[in-house]
Image 1 (cartoon, rainbow, N blue to C red):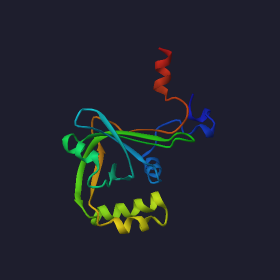
Image 2: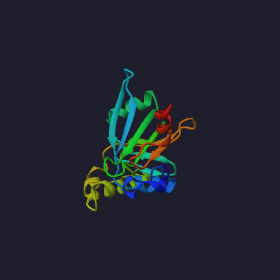
Image 3: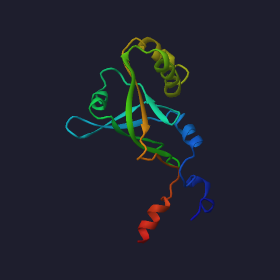
Length: 168
């Protein structure tokens, strides 16, 4: 079935364009970051995120456990999804890089933190952020690696490659 043969309520039935992905992640979509702990087990953490320039930025607290994991192994997986409607989603495997911290928020870390506070908490978000700005945080950039493509999808129907496998 082609995209035009599906009713609108089923979604786009394809991956997202770069602009659609940016629009999706500009909303209050929580990212779930999977790291590998010191025993080799997956560890998943929900975090606020900001998508810019083909990478995701997160601002964890100084004592967040997953930062310790990243120091031992910077490989991560990230999942973002709307769990209703057309189930828009993004999956990324990549590497995390600590750009800042741990230190009180300033510069790019503060700019991103201010935008996140409004995105996730509404116009009163800065009322949360301002009294916590002196608490140490990190700024972490997560980008897909060359060998792992970013996977996006919007729609309730199966992707075509699943349909082809089902017929085999």
